[in-house]
Image (cartoon, rainbow, N blue to C red):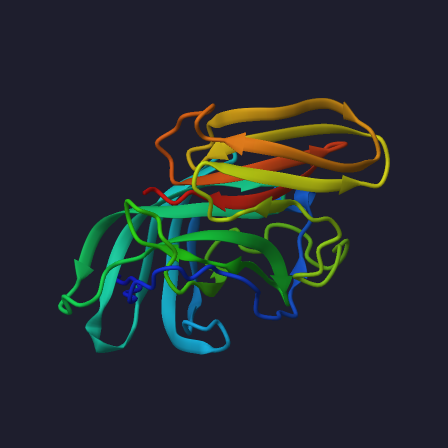
Length: 268
């Protein structure tokens, strides 16, 4: 199946907001029992440039291989006009999310020279929808090399084949999707050299704060130990932590519970 999104590059557009969903979030322990290996199929909606509507809807597909928390594989997407492409994909499962990026074109149909490929990234939440397991969430896109944002979108993927219902989906869910009970604020995002990571603790807690690249390697450890109740801010500085990566994952663990956020760097 040879498919991939082709979208016009839009300079200066930054993703914000989400599309409401009725699915229920899986918690971190439930996600740890899921077999992520195999095929996930669904849709990707591409936003308009003003982010107030949907420009196009594309068929979207993942073929994933999981080794612990590390995920590799391919993504495929196609739309009208015969445009398609297949891309290499890599990512990390953090808590109840899959953080991923596309990074290499395997095959494509690119007949319109006025357009350019935009690699997609994603902060996809594992969720329950009826008896199905899904990956739902924002899938912003970026121009290769420079990592400048394109128009972005939202994806809704469903696990197909054996293993999709390997856990009890009938109980113990935390909340409706997009009603997060804790926020990891990362600004600016995307960033050039430095990004601020901010969070509020409602009590004294044991806190670990790391920044990973998309292969799962830790590139910076910003906190490890106890923090007092209140607001906390940390700086991720790529000059102090030189890496070739364009996309990072901020992973915050508070008393053993994982929260994460995708962080992108503009390269120019």
